[in-house]
Image 1 (cartoon, rainbow, N blue to C red):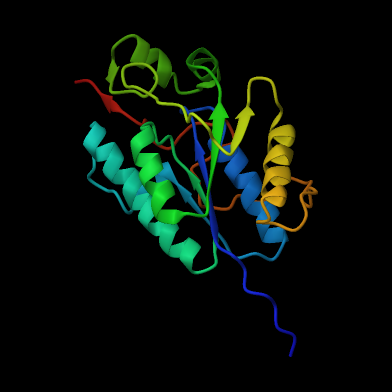
Image 2: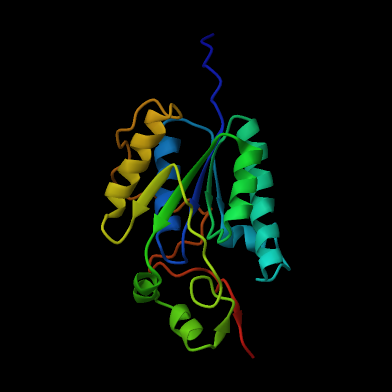
Length: 213
């Protein structure tokens, strides 16, 4: 019986504004790691909200609670040798850093796009509503987003195509020793993982803020 070396668990944590490209890249990474026969799980902020964090609002405290819950699950998976992908706005630096210190094997990916660019991509017009004051507590408009100061990986979706961004991520994971080979193995679009609320038109499942009455 051939014994495979135990897979090392790690967490790749995608953070960035709503519409920056987190779900797109996390889906791509999910399929790349699956193709490498790795144990992989994907925790998406919107999906977690409807399950693990049902009932939480969008105050800073509730947002932090949501992120720390995601971090708790990611830590359990990581400890058990699973490649864990987190895709969540995670606007506050302190909550992300608490997850980092718990998980240890933590790769932060800052998916950068400006508020203006994300608003242009936003098919639901949530940014427009937030800018008009119809939605309160919207990250990047009426609520803060604190970008990572020294993320392991920085991708700029305003200047890079998703193919370029995912290649950068694979190269870095390979350099860090989390994967053996950074070459792209998946080229055709894969069927949807079911783990993210990624729509074909890129719309989130639910607004990440409160609509004012």
